[in-house]
Image 1 (tube, rainbow, N blue to C red):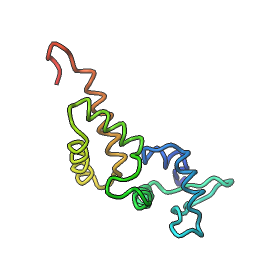
Image 2: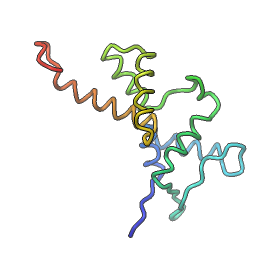
Image 3: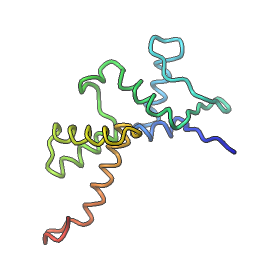
Image 4: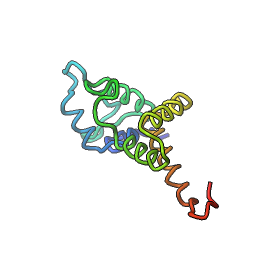
Length: 137
C-alpha cells in the first residue's frame, strides 16, 4: 500500500497559505535554529513530505511564532477570506472571530485555517441563493 504525504504545496493549502510562506519558514527556521520548522517525515529527490496528521503540529508551530499571539501577525489567506465573507454577512471582526472559535472548538481535528476556509466556502455557496426578492435563506 502506498503511503501519502503532503508536500510544501499541500501543507500550505491545508493552512490556507502560499507555498512561498512554507518555503520561507523552512529557510528561516532550519533544524539547528532555536525554533526549527517541523522536520519532514520523508524526502524524495530533495522534496520534503509530511504526514497529513502533522498539519495540526505545523499550525501550532506557526501559531507560536513571535507576533502571532494575541491577534498579532498577519492573518492567513483562509482567515482573511473568512473575515471578508463574514463582513458581507454583517459580522464585525470580533463577532467573526468568536464564531470561528466556536467552530474550531467543535471540530478539533481541523486547523483554524481549515475551518475558516470551510465556512467562507459555505457562505460563498449561500450567496447563490440570495435574491432581492427575499426568496433565499
